[in-house]
Image 1 (tube, one colour):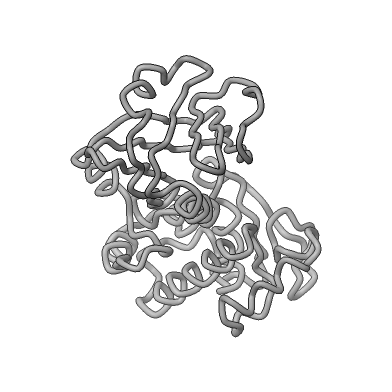
Image 2 (cartoon, rainbow, N blue to C red):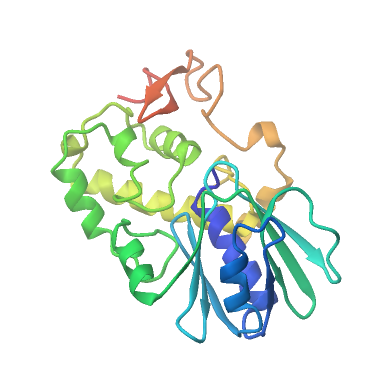
Length: 266
């Protein structure tokens, strides 16, 4: 499932390519045909990302809500677009570019009230300038759930996926099984700050990279694109710890496989 940095990068690119335009909207698959007929020809105001959710906001208080889930995928085309490939739920055609959306978990027509309800169910998004981490700290500080489970809970912090969970906890030497309410506020702030930093680097580079010098600015982190795939991560799916050389242990936590070093993460 795409993590928050990917969704924000998609929103940024699609805003550049489509915002302000009257777009044509089709549903080659047919499952979004009624909605496409209503929306086609309207002006797209903006594309907004919140956590792992995308919102296509039109000037008429009509909004498309998209959640990619495990199998959702965008394909971008230069106009004219090619014949649809696979089960295309939604095709958007702008003045110069088009995109196809295949296999999303959710693709629905909503209004601003429903959009607000969806956002209210989510925790703060580290990639949004209006994010307030205090709500996340309140939830963590009063929960006995493992921190590794809390970081995957989108109602606590929106946008963190399994890879970032493993890498953040490793970089901060925190065991994923540690009860959340045993963290102090300084440790939470370190988690929040590192999450903001890594997600921003991921958005800029359009890939997860956690092995670079984190003292660099986000712009300088563009050099992360040159790092080989096998060297982009510290501990996720790694057999040995890069710090001490011990075995990396893995187990199921919150229905996903977590990776951790017992020696370095206390």
